[in-house]
Image 1 (cartoon, rainbow, N blue to C red):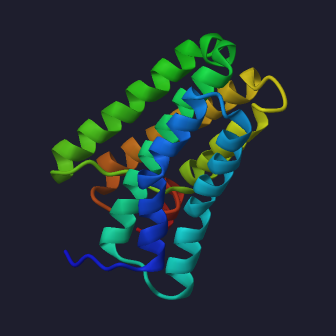
Image 2: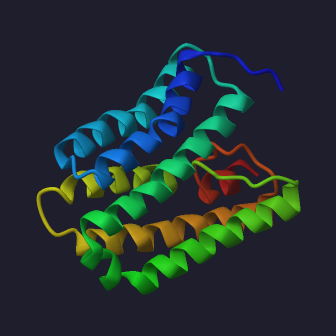
Length: 186
């Protein structure tokens, strides 16, 4: 697999490389700087894909790097929220346990079936990632307990869809829009 230093790949990598900065800002109590950095670092998730598609820079490596950056960034976001609004996490513990269990099962299943863990970018999962991003930002302004529950439930649905895709359709393009698109195409 050829690794190219493209703008989209650098943007994806920046989410991984700059993640420790967010932890540092949160731990040292620089909350305004944390939120500012979170907005900037999180926005790379939007721009990496847009630029890759617009300038025909989509690659297998880029998709894998983006998935890894997404996973680290959004799992870290759950941790950040546990520090910013622990009551929102506590009130949704069961939903989050179910979500993380299904996420783990999805990685185990894809690793077993395809010899590597796969993270899909279905419409549900893409939109939910955007919701997580905004939940963190909204947590500065108000209690996000209900929003955390909604996000967890939608993630459960999204990863169940991903598991069904693996079982029914096998190793498909991670950017597959939904199981319904696959059904229509077959």
